[in-house]
Image 1 (spheres, one colour):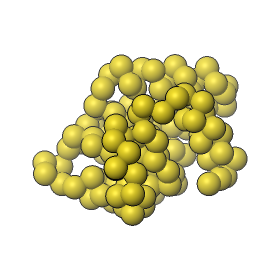
Image 2 (cartoon, one colour):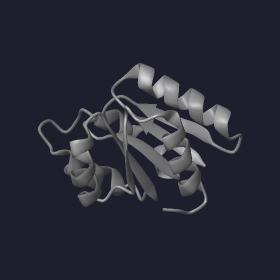
Image 3 (cartoon, one colour):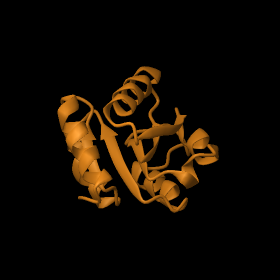
Length: 123
């Protein structure tokens, strides 16, 4: 599975990369972005199977997070998992069309379970 990580925090991107690449040898992080503009121009986006997208990723000025999901979807990306620091963001993220929502405070095993399900064509 080819993965793009889009999160404003370098530490979060590094931790996710480490987790993902050590979890399954068939998974590779092909690009990272700290804002929406970088995400849109990164070469790996069109080749990605999955994007881990920070729900409040900076970019597009005052655009709502849902508009950002639509912008990313235009790349033809198959799956988007929204990452958020507030559980209240889950419903709006799912309404915007993400495939799943993960709170950044959830334990790594929850993230791993969800990624494995997506890698197998679920949910």
